Image (tube, rainbow, N blue to C red; front, side):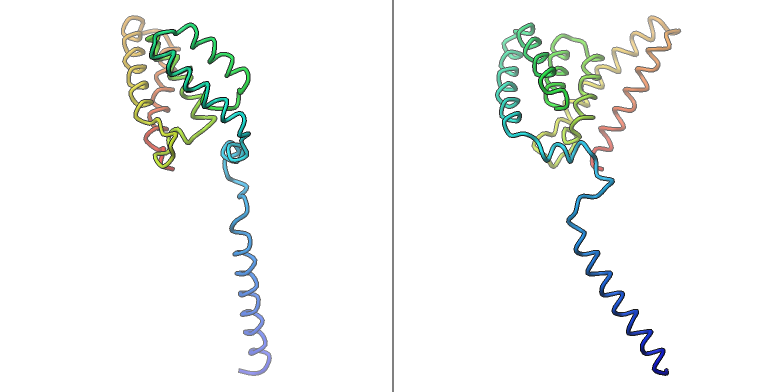
Length: 175
């Protein structure tokens, strides 16, 4: 090995060390492929969170008491005030399940999950996977009974595809 080879090896070692330092420095930065909704959820307004928590307690009490019309009015107001929060849509799904409308409830739950994927993450306190799986099962039963009554209806078959998508989404929630 002559001096040129030694200098080349030394330059490669220095470049390797420099690139590892740069890579380690950028590990804590926000990644460009990170879900935009998750980034927005991290920057959430604490006052809005407190309002949603208080309203959530009231809505749960109204649903348990059977005051569905009052709960629906409150949920509608929350959806208008906080359209990009998942909680009001989750409450709407709960209300629709109480009203025995699992198909519309499934769509409300789907909106909630699209806005806040933590509802399907077992590691968060927001996890609602078991409840959602039951709701989707009831919606599938309802749609299958409608298909038996009207087998030519294409929109029902489309709704069935949405249900299967939702099942896959629930099953793959760990990712």
